[in-house]
Image (cartoon, rainbow, N blue to C red; front, side, top):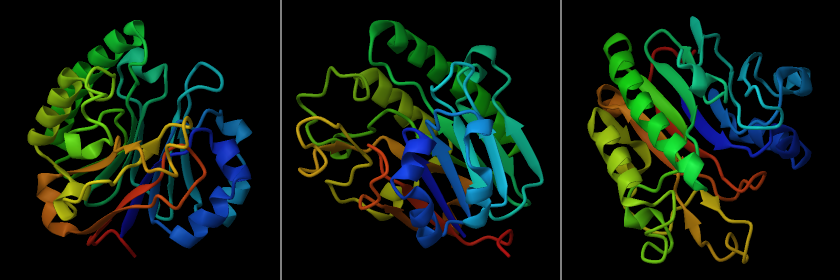
Length: 258
């Protein structure tokens, strides 16, 4: 079973850049999208269904053209959960979960901290999200959280760790939070298989960063430790260029896949 996470930076813009053709070729069973920047009535559901995804779930932000997550699936989930039940998080459309028979998939879009107000917001979100997941893990021990975490975990995950040490996304406090979050019962699926440097999932639009591979790895599929023995592969797809991010994916063995 193949699961992909992709911050599309506007689903309508991504579709104009060939996203649906790419989706059919990549052929994931489930794809988590972040930053859809659209309401459900603005999204061409029929075209997405025709691409092989009859089960579509969208959780948009209250603010138009902002944030929002989605999950597209070939397989019907047994349960869908919109948001976390925490008002300020859910107003920005940042969490969506599908429950299948033997595991659950969450699409996460963690805030960026590009200015001081949003940095405080990001830290509050991170703390509250950790508590939420700590409780959720009791109910759902097999969880995949695919998404844009807006944090590079380690120096290997960023092209210039020295110069970016004081930039949000690579602050010591952010990295410590992600480290503790992973160690609370998750596996960084990509690093489970690949210890090589220069593997990134986001590049600035400035200074030809993508062509020079001056990137950040801020998109992850974190997998519950109890699922780690079912992981068979993890990958990053930098050749997919519908966004300033690229897709990140995993393959797992599971009885849900039919």
